[in-house]
Length: 241
Ligand SMILES: NC(=O)C1=CN([C@@H]2O[C@H](COP(=O)(O)OP(=O)(O)OC[C@H]3O[C@@H](n4cnc5c(N)ncnc54)[C@H](O)[C@@H]3O)[C@@H](O)[C@H]2O)[C@@H](O)CC1
Ligand SMILES: [K+]
Image (cartoon, rainbow, N blue to C red):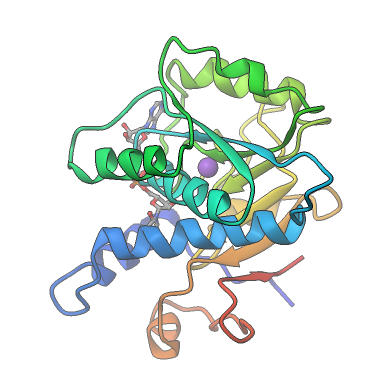
C-alpha cells in the first residue's frame, strides 16, 4: 500500500488547526504525546535490559522538534534508560522549554549545553542510539552552525551508532528528501501525526519507519486527505515498515 503523506505546508496548517480556538489543544499536550511516541519507538527497537548498555544521546534543536526530544528523554529515563541530552541552542520564546529542562534535572538527566563535550557520547560501546530531535517540518536549508558540525559527526558514527529521527531526518528537505549524499541516514524514523513526503525517500532496508503522535480523530485525518493509521490498543506508535 502507498505511504500516506502530507506536505510540509499542510502539516503546518494541521498543527495550527489542532492548536486553534476550535480544537483547543495546547502545544504542551501535543509535545508530551509526540515525545512519548518517540520514546516508545526507541523501546520497541532497543528493548531495555539490565544486562546491556542503556545510554541514549538525545540531541535537541531550538524548536518544537527539540521539545519533542526533551520530553522523549524524560520518558526514556522513566523506562530505565540513561538518557543524556545535548541542547546547544536553548529557546527563550516561551518559559515552557526551561520547564522541560527543569523536569529533566528532576529526573537527574544530564543536559549539556554549547561548549560541553557532547561528542564523548558518540561512543557506540557505551551508547545505544542517538535521538535526532534537531529539526522537524520547519527546517529550511542550508543548515546553520552548530548544527552542520553536529550532523557531520552523526554521519560519521551512524553505521555503528543508530540514529532515531523525530518526524524528519534532520537536514533532509521536508518535501524532497535528502538533498545530497552528505545527509544522515537514520536507522529509525518516527513520523508524527502523518509522514511528510521525505519519508517516501527512505530505503526501508536500512530505515525502520514508525508513525506516532496519535492525537487526531478519523474525520480530521480524512479532511487532511489521509486514512487514519490502525494503531493497536493504547500504542503510541505503529510500525509502517
Ligand atoms: N502536530 C504535530 O505533528 C506536532 C509536531 N511537533 C513537532 O514540531 C515540529 C515542528 O516544530 P517547529 O515548527 O518549531 O520547527 P522545527 O523544530 O522544525 O525547527 C524550527 C527551529 O529551527 C530553526 N531552523 C530552521 N532552519 C534552520 C537552519 N537551516 N539552520 C539552523 N536553524 C534552523 C528555526 O530558527 C527554529 O528555531 C514537528 O516536526 C514535530 O517534531 C510537536 O512538538 C507537537 C505536535
Ligand atoms: K529530526
